[in-house]
Image 1 (cartoon, rainbow, N blue to C red):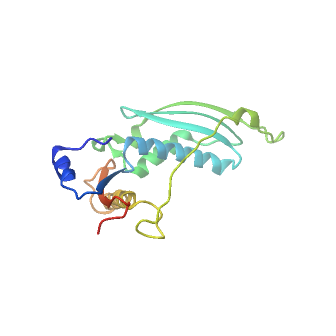
Image 2: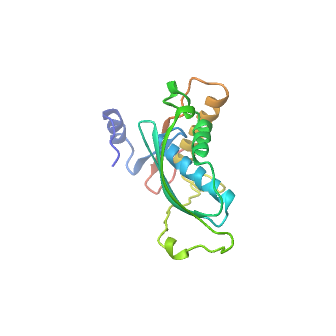
Image 3: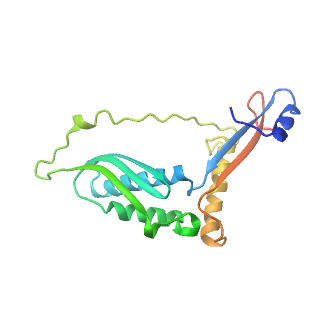
Length: 195
């Protein structure tokens, strides 16, 4: 359960019967978890551009401005992993030590097992990768718009993060890539938005 401040608790107590708050948080692209997600996605995308049939398992961790890239990959061709990491960090906006890190001087530790495929044999060992599965769950709702199928709080929080990123890159250079946004929406018991 989300911890609330004394002020919030008082406000919650004064809600009409059957009303409740849903608090949604979103993290900006410079948040450590988001940075790691973007790096693993960039690495997978780079490998798939080289070999669309590649088998890739990639995880990224961050500790004290040092990145750790772990994984197993089976593919034809190769990529410059360090360049993929640096370009992704640069795109996110970490280009100066004052912002927390600089892509130019990143420390990256790679623990990646790569099996290159012999193009003459043209075979992948499918059995080696049968346990690579993931399940993602979620839900869609048209609670406020039939074309945007996510809860209003999620939509607003993510849009604020996107707008902060644009503002930081275009005009407000003093903003940093790491941000968090919290949006609170009041609902009635039947899960209808309050006007």
